[in-house]
Amino acid sequence: MNNIISKISMVLLFGLLMIFKISAQEVLTLQQCKRKAVDHNQKVKSALSDLKSSEASLKLSKRSMLPVLDLSSSYTYLSDPNQMIVPGYELPTVDGDPSGVYSPGSTTDLAYENSYTASIGMSLPIYMGGKLRYANTLSSLSLALAEDNVDLTKSELLLDVETKYWSLVSLREQKGVVEKSIELLTDVLKEVRNRYETGVVTKNEVLKTQVELNNSKLSLIEISNNLELAKMSLNQRIGNGILSSIQIQDSIIFIPEKLSSISFSENHLRNRPELKMLNNQVEVSKVEKKLVNADYKPQIVSYANYLSQNPNHYMEQENEFTFNAGVSVSVPVFHWGEKRLKNVQNKMAIQKAELNLDESTELIVLEIRQAIFRLKESLVKLNFTETSMEQANENLKLETNRLMEGVTTTRDLLDAQLQWQESHADYINAKTEVKTNEAKYYKAIGDLKI
Image (cartoon, rainbow, N blue to C red):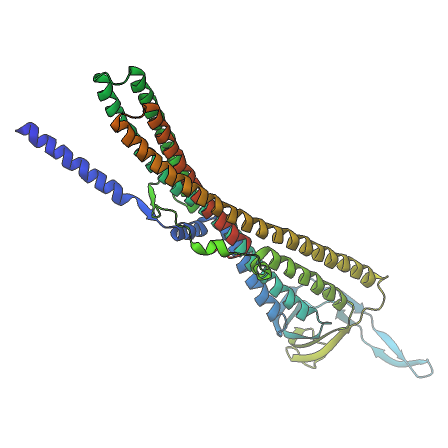
């Protein structure tokens, strides 16, 4: 009785452990994997940091057009200021003769024992040749570049996540195919053994079936190992621990019908972050040229100061406040051809940026067309493998019935089973290839999103 109770307890405990293990596994959809990857990825975080920095730079450039208010002060103490001693002397008359009037000597400080200054001043740029406006434009373009860089980094990451995700789905489906193959071969092996015991077939037929069964079991071990490695790879990409137990929600690869009607359009180029970045780089080069020209235009700045100082040579009494205001003008006159040479440099930079844009546009057009061709090619391949799978199903069914009726050999059934397994594996690989090429297509047209 106690032995029975112990066995029941062990079964219940094992069941609870299995339920806990299954519940502890994280079930993830493709969208969840993408979100986790974006939240975890260091390159995306770095791109977002650059974006925040560009936003701050834009705010700074706008504020450079506003008045600036500064407060400054200083104090100096001299323990032994230098003195000038003037001796007494007799004052002369207008004719230079002695007047009999004596001027006493005196001592004068050449420096003050205590000297200080305190001022509050405001300055406002009036005209800087357009430098402030162009700097603001450059900051806006830098912000756009940072935003496009974030999109580019995300798209490359999302493509990698999709590839790993559908690879994991594929391995799981292939594992199911091998398990069904093992189940089928196990039944065939039982039937062949029964026929061997009755003398209908030779022992060689039994051994052939056993070898095929062993091969399928070995394939199951290899696929199981590859499945675990694929989980580790996906865990690393989405920020989980490498050995974390996860399950993916998709078990069947669904192929949307709209993929067969895709075609190239010039509008696809508008969404590519690389082209957006290169277009902005051309604009940056043009604005930098204008910024150089602004350095050689007049610079006008107004200022106003309110100060108190000791000594104060502008006031009658010490500690009185002084106010002054004015405008400063700086006009570049001659700089040995600096402006012309810098314009040549900027012109070459603009030309280089435009050439890079043209070359990248051609390459991206080629990339999009290749992505479309490969996707359509994989769709055709999928149709072929689906037909082959249907034929293999019918052939296996036929050979199984013929073996039961004793009108075929074990070798024919094993060949039909091998064809069935290979056709299902090819079909799964074809579906995986379609999903991967679909992701590459959306990435090529700049439309790969979470």
